[in-house]
Length: 261
Length: 275
Image 1 (cartoon, rainbow over the protein chains, first blue to last red):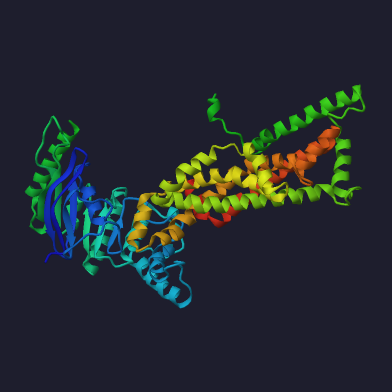
Image 2 (image 1 turned 180 degrees about the horizontal axis):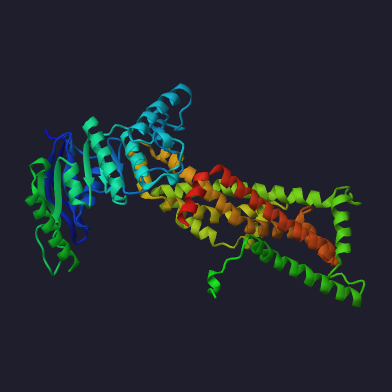
């Protein structure tokens, strides 16, 4: 049985079809990168995995069971921004996951339990290279450091799936390369399932084991919203060559043009 | 020559410019007072600083012949007690209801229209009702302050709660947080500095309601005293009392701001980054 099964889902808002006939299967441990023009429904798809949006038709199964209709600890998320809590220091941000888990009513840990949780949090901090920033608040950290913290925080609960919604979109190219290294290191170590949305096709090829392109197959110039997007390319990244990359690039450029027209 | 909008005063210039209106006000007062007293030495409307000084001496440092109290201080304690109690109750109610309204769509659907309606009732219009229900004692004055400022704080904090990025609330849920835990660890700590801001904004109206209530029925209090001595045209008492009230208002605001800076450094750091 596959880990995740997407069974013919559609998503419509009134008369606007956002996604149509999305069918796919994902095995445990895959690192899937998702590209597509803006408004093509890739974020909607990610939100369905997260549990904040629901398919209009069809269903998404995880281990044979429907994905719960609210966010949960088995699916971690890193957004482009606002992912960490501004009122907690870096260490407290990580500690929070353990405090929520072990202290149901006051959500604070003391004594030995706290020291134990803190040791774990510090270990996580140094994995993402933030050990020196333990007592700094997010606003004192750079954008890249904030995203490192957000990733570490998402991993504290050891989720089965890590969802990344353009996590490096706002970062400088140099910092982005560091982040790529970090995310590959984490994936190699944990073999967690990663779904990552990116604007950058090259990033998608470099990082993932499998690349999805969301795009519309059918177009109606009179009613641009009558048809939704679906997965138009689904390719294992290691089997990919230059010409495939150019092909995808061209088809995306084409649909961007139609989108703008 | 630079455009005026681009000229910034230096540090000294800023202080001098800030002082200027105060100094001008004092000069204008002294001039008017001098002119009037010259025409009529018994004039009561614009007493000289010496007369005001005597009044302060009498109110603050000599026991009253009638009650034996030092009236300025007993008035101040009475007023501050009412004000602080009223503001404290309003802040607690505002915090709880504001957060619940902002965080839980079920509660919001239930309470938000009601609170919006209540907030439109002019509190002074129901002061007689408060006197009838709670009597003329302390309770009715505290209640007027509570009724006057609570709806504003509730609505303000509801809006602030709803402004928190949805990403944060989702993130907390992916860390396994329950509704209660999200409120306790994510929403409330971020709303507390907003509460202090809301209370600072509410202090003006709170003083207004306090003095109005004291003016109508009280035996002590800063507002009571001002309205009492009005009968004798005692501007020499009214003026220092007004200055004293202004100073107390300034002091409470300053203390609240300091508390906020100390307790929520992340909040003020964030604000600075945005501006």
